[in-house]
Image (cartoon, rainbow, N blue to C red):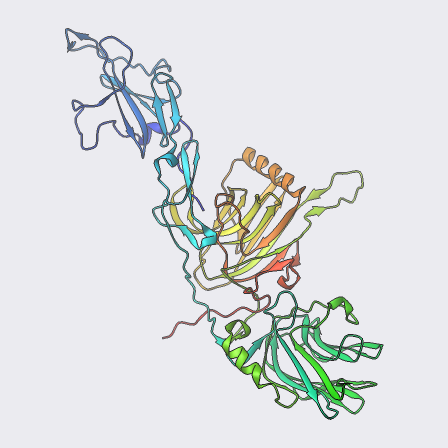
Length: 554
């Protein structure tokens, strides 16, 4: 996050330049700093004005014996255009002034405006980047900081919309392990032959993942109950014979339902809300006899071997919640105590659709943005189309970014709470290439409502829309072409797509480096991004469930 200020030398200087007197002076006969004008009988004066640039004043009235000649006509030395060089020349009675814009200082010997290095003056609390005629302050967004209203110091990023993140101690969250490993592992031993009985309440918006595994080692008898396309799927293997069955209603609607699996005499019966949806004949038992005891392994939220060794591969990661579980007639009381002691194993009490980013991590993907042309002889083109449906909790954070192998932020879409060049506090969505903002649009980020952010970037254009309204461009057409050419170069190399934040990049690498906090559903090039399919996802990000906005109490 940064602050830009100033413009090029000499632009619009006449309208906003102040008289170059010392602070508190109001009369032209008060002392002024001598700048030297290099002419006999001429006294030069100058003062540096840090907010409005620099003026150098030169007296031009001829003098006789130390006194100005009364009635001498005023000469407009600005008329020939060379009095101030590249600075703006302003004629005054008995003198003239050379004016530089804010961020520049006038050099009398060179008759030029020289850039002031504001960073050397220590104007920023944290990082500072000097630029011609201005400077930018940056705060450590990854550390939870943003620019304060004075645009130079830093302050904490605090939520402006409260989310109901309360959790239920009587629930078990299945999506805690991004690795796909089980969240619970149980091992049962019996003296007598025993049959599996499992029943639990289940809630999810996730279309795919593993509910539980039960059986012996992978070469013996086992079953896996999971979801595929929102329906229950049962994979089983009994002594070399494999089978996959899917049936029943779509259940990833976010409402609680009761699911049970019961091992009967040569049959497995799966029920949803007490209605049988699968009845499968099997040749064997899940409990296996070993050294005089009958053994059964049961894992919840994952499988004890690689998913490629399943009958049909499945993504085991499941953002789901179970409660009121009953494994083998209640012989699992230790799970209750384990879950109660660990909030990360608990579910949100209430959820809606979407991915929840808590402001502490990101997910990243390896995506290809190249478009292969229909004609084999033409060059490969590229496009980046992003649609994000967001319900933010804070006014600052990265929604999406493309990051190169050298940690260059090639492109970013982010929320920010200030206009960098106008120095105004304002809630905005920005589209940037590297550290330069291409376009921006206002957004009511703290209203608790869902907003739609759409970005389209190609080799010759870049657009940003918020809730159907097109944003304004922040760069010239020529500068846009240069930035898009730089982006195209980045896309030819190794680029990763980050969602919800940035890796450990320099704080000046992008306008915003803070983690996003809030709900989000994302499409890239018209394909929904599933956090369960990411190369990496922070374990605190919930892939398909988001807590609702907390309702204000009357």
